Amino acid sequence: MRRVLIVGATSPLARYMAHEFAKQGDALFLAARDEDELERVASDMRIRFGATVHTGLFDAAAIETHEAFWQQVLQAMDGLDGVVWVAGSMDGLEEAFRDPRAVRRLIDVNFTGAASLLTLAACYFEQQGSGFIAGVSSVAGDRGRGQNYPYGAAKGGLSLFLQGLRNRLSKKGVQVTTIKPGFIDTRMTWGRDKLPFLASPQRVAQESVQAILRGKDIAYVPAVWWLVMLVIRAIPERVFKRMNI
Ligand SMILES: NC(=O)c1ccc[n+]([C@@H]2O[C@H](COP(=O)([O-])OP(=O)(O)OC[C@H]3O[C@@H](n4cnc5c(N)ncnc54)[C@H](OP(=O)(O)O)[C@@H]3O)[C@@H](O)[C@H]2O)c1
View 1 (cartoon, rainbow, N blue to C red):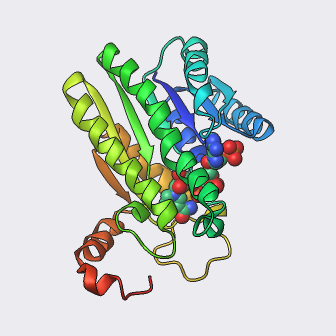
View 2 (view 1 turned 45 degrees about the vertical axis):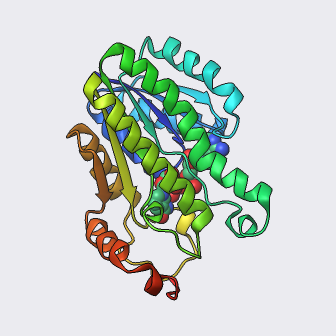
């Protein structure tokens, strides 16, 4: 039995990831901002899997609250074995192209908040000499694109942060996994037509948890995105800057 914190637990991807852990008998702490929805997700999991599930409010952007939140989780779970960061948002993307406050909000939720909480997790697991950290980044973080770079830059920052944590912690018995999904069929992509390789949150969740449990460093999910991004990253900048993708 592992004790796992899932942040951003009201998202469809996180819910299905929580199912995968609960099926294996793991105890969970689910965190996000929407208290009612969190309680709904938790009771569903208690009924479905007989799982031990705690919940707590967490706002990625409220960095000053993160230490107290972290202590709350450790106390409720009597220690921790893993943290899965799934929280993320593209809300305010249009505004972020022009408004400095909007771009800051996007970066706070997708990068600074993650870096803050995962710093606490890193120190805890480092001292414990065991544990895992998994972060859901995005293929959007692999190359800056005109259509989403404020979000992509934050995800790119998160990927680098996780890479650095992996470099620091792998010598200390702590595993760090970076999950890079392509398009997932969730609220974030609703209304956008003809997205290539659009995958269900169930599938992405299953493959993501598999990658974590197998101790992978970086997992593109579905795996086809590894090849897609290899090609996209290989396009010379002088060509890429003229493309509208
Ligand atoms: N959908 C895609 O195509 C796609 C592709 C690549 C990567 N991703 C990433 O996959 C993850 C899940 O995305 P999704 O598509 O399932 O999106 P979603 O349904 O919009 O879920 C986003 C989650 O993040 C939480 N969240 C948002 N702002 C937060 C904040 N300030 N503090 C704490 N939690 C916050 C939300 O919970 P509350 O609102 O309750 O706080 C929710 O649980 C995200 O990191 C996203 O960037 C998605």
